[in-house]
Length: 135
Image 1 (tube, one colour):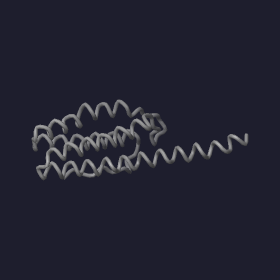
Image 2 (cartoon, helix red, strand yellow):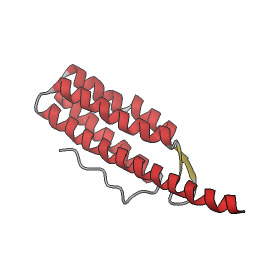
Image 3 (cartoon, helix red, strand yellow):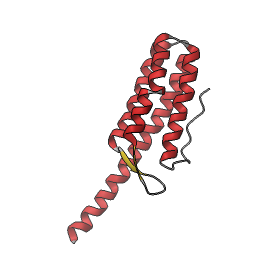
Image 4 (cartoon, helix red, strand yellow):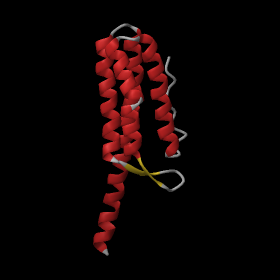
């Protein structure tokens, strides 16, 4: 019983720390998304592509560290299919637009990318998490 009393707080702290790390990574991903857009709009296509890849890294590390999360409603949500859809959908479209230096396609891809972020957060019931509008 004493062991349980020692292990339980440690587990709780570790769980909280993981959530804080993921929160930090997702906030970093949002900053990187906005930075990618600013770079793209400034015509710095190669830098925008590099920043988009850093954004992807932040998002994928978050999902890898906690691939299944409990939603606000209590259901377990597997984030891996959502990540795969994001990677193969709007993120792939953004990378392609940046590689082609296509401003019109980039604008559409940013809009779709943001919408997928909002949808993922909504699936977890995290409607308080706001994803910045893309300028």
